[in-house]
Amino acid sequence: MSNRGREDSVTDVFKSQVRNACREHGMSDLIASLNGSDRDINADTLFGVCDRFFLVEMKSYNRNVRDEAKKPAVCLLCNGLQRSSRVRSWHRACHFIMWGRVVKDSLETRFNIYQDSVCRDSVLPNCSGLGEPPKPTIYRGEDLARGAALGTAGLSKPDFFNYLWWLLNGRAVDVDEFKITPGSRLGFSLFGTSDASGKVISKTFRTYDDLEVWAEDALKQLVTFRG
Image (cartoon, rainbow, N blue to C red; front, side, top):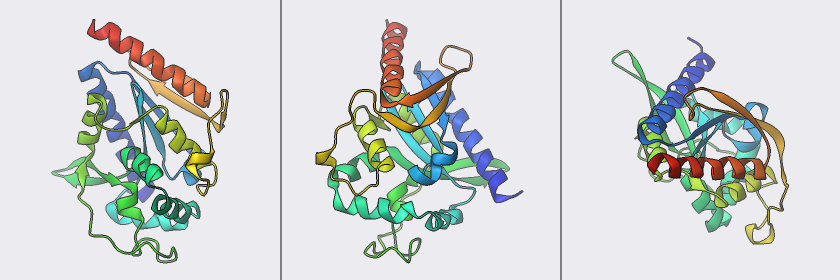
């Protein structure tokens, strides 16, 4: 099996884990592939669970984490995280990297915070000043899915929108100097699917407001579900 084929399988497994966790806890799910924007955002998929969001970069194997060095935006990301404690706190709550591990013929998901796996000299030797932190703890993907459904994983609005804006706008801007104005466009079309209603529906998101409306509707559905 090619690396790309297994990456797709890892993605499929985690999507199922998220949707299963959401059904179990009565939460609305949103899953959107980032398509060609993954090199700008350093993530393949955006996940939404009610009013919380997170990004995941998918890999076939743990060793493929090193492939992130091929993306020119990665060094900007890592350096930006070092400069701003606020952006770093957003990142650590919502930006992850995930890969697959075969256990007894079953493909399981493993993940870590993106910064902890990628922002180090051994992965980005041409990006100065990162150092080599201790090896990070590796977690199970199903725990991330469950945490999102329980409201303990991911980043709520407006912080997630601020982090996404920062990723898409150069990563060097001072976070105290920008504000997302009403109607601000994402810069690309985001096609998301959800099966919260019992059937898969699709929706196009073009602005930050579109994502906010989805989150508000998901909160209303949650209140109705829990009576």
